[in-house]
Image (cartoon, rainbow, N blue to C red; front, top):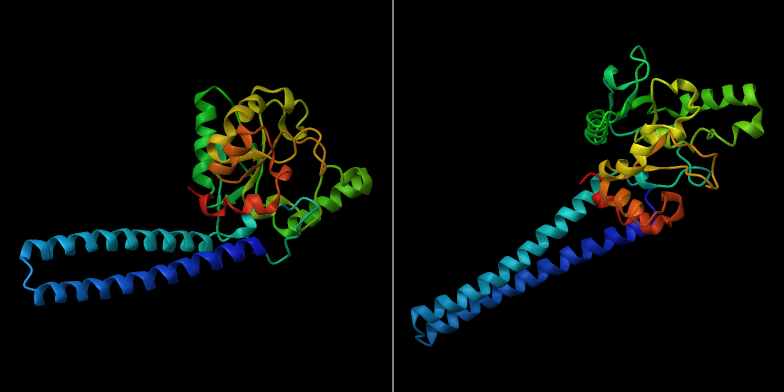
Length: 272
């Protein structure tokens, strides 16, 4: 759901493009009038060309600004604003929401190569680079959970509720519609030693590596120690774009620390 701040920014850019086009039209008319006047006054050709050059430079600058605004407008209108919304017990994704496209993560990167794990297609290049860089550093990261549909989350939460009781399940598992995994941009990491239990992952070399490096690939830790949504989950990382993840890392902040309005400003840079 596009929020009011997103719509307001879109409207502002559309207005800027319209105003710039009007300015360009005025400049073209002015240029034509100047050339006619100079010719009538028998001004030398060199002077005519100099005036034309000056006005041409002004037009180029204006056209450049229009192209910039159009590019920004295109990014905003083609990037899913849901991808930077805060969901955990805050915003809701309905049962019809699915990412624009997902792809299967190759088995060599997963904890169980016999299972299918999927990720948002545009996020995959960043995740792949992260996994390869970790491997180069001797870090054995494996994907144990990725995209889940609304229905998948409902089944999972139901199973946890039966096993642990509703109160306990609510401390570590989101209700359907509130899970970041439904976005297709979120993964849970593990390693061969920790496996599916996640026990000890917070003390692993893999977690230390993620804390120092994940932001370089656009990923941020959703549920740090002391967060108000769920228990500490050192394995749960969400893609928010390199710019936002790096700014959060530099300021020692987390996504849920910031207002949604501030976060929305990063939408156009999500996949840069």
